[in-house]
Amino acid sequence: QDQLVESGGGLVQAGGSLRLSCEASGRNFSNYAMGWFRQAPGKEREFVATISWSGNSKYYTDSVKGRFTISRDNAKNTVSLQMNLVKPEDTAVYYCVATLGLAYPKPWYEYDFWGQGTQVTVSA
Image (cartoon, rainbow, N blue to C red; front, side, top):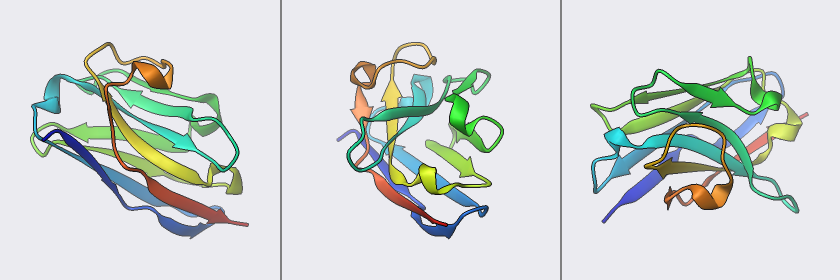
């Protein structure tokens, strides 16, 4: 069974840091582009970051550039999102995603696999 399982969410104060992890299992995800989306209450799903299968290409939404870093370890089938200098507006459920396509910002419906999500809450 192909699965993406997120971990690392929680409550953090504004200005703090949090590291999200996603473990992929089932098929070989090392040749998939991976990424993160988030969804805040009452808002649409929002692209956060994506990384190519090789790790050489990375894209971020403007609001997290310079604060968040996406990385992957194909040997461990994991992708991570290091979140620094977090803000209350980063509060959302964060989802790990995967696609066989190229790694670039694309609509949520173009991703083939989704995790169950992990809650991140940033207090002011």
